[in-house]
Image 1 (tube, rainbow, N blue to C red):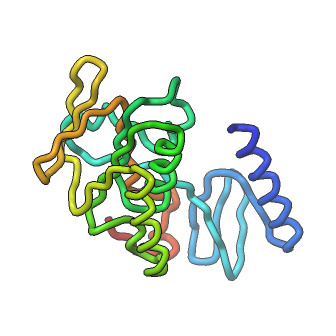
Image 2 (cartoon, one colour; image 1 turned 90 degrees about the horizontal axis):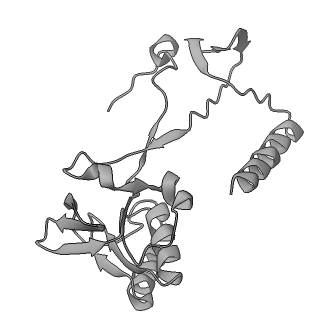
Length: 194
């Protein structure tokens, strides 16, 4: 996996270079709206793109420490027999699909009426939602996990619809937070919200 990611990053860097885009790796902070500092270097341009990366979000629920995130998926020591994936975006759908295709009994818990609700074509939403169910994924819609308890090696998810789901792995794929705290966005006149 690491070699694959490294190869992809090299391809992206080469594409940027071929497009005449200056690509700088490091920790950036804005000095003003058109100036950014990376290490000891200062860059001024009309257009600055800072790719901050992101950190996975985990809900603050009792037992949340027992859940993993998409960042941890490829580090699982063994395939779980049962998994609960929480989320409705493409990462949650993709990982639930992988678990299911490999033979893991998979539940997918999502807050809304189904998955891929934001930014996806309605026909894609309809097909993906029906195919998840058809392929054997237990989709729990209009619900959230409110608690995770550990009983021996089993993780027990309490869902706000009254259901409890036992699993060997709970994976939270509920979004990512940008790593923007050190960017000094206020120096660039950028206002942020939570």
